[in-house]
Image 1 (cartoon, rainbow, N blue to C red):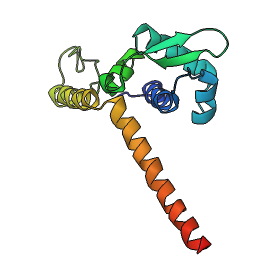
Image 2: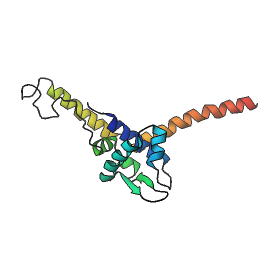
Image 3: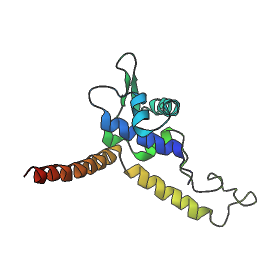
Length: 153
């Protein structure tokens, strides 16, 4: 599978946007700083995400980006495909010309893997990732609160 940084960064950036978004748009500069992703790279990714109607842009002072769809309506596959990231484990890009212009012996194996990966990423929503992050953050905070209580006693 050729899932490069483009797809990974797009998912990371949208997860960051979803976690930070309140009533105000989120700037790419803020996402860039938090996630250590180049601002110019984010600008390229968000242009594609906007074209795919996954995000909306708000111009002017206080502008930035916000999600264009409900979290539970955006799959990870949607995000990856929006930035033109192929989900393909075959050598031939699915053209079946991988061995002397014909289908190689393992083509069907890799094509099936593509289907499974796409099915999995299509079933995971941005809402699930947001919920997982919030649960992890909450789990990290509780021990700190408990430690403070015991140290105060």
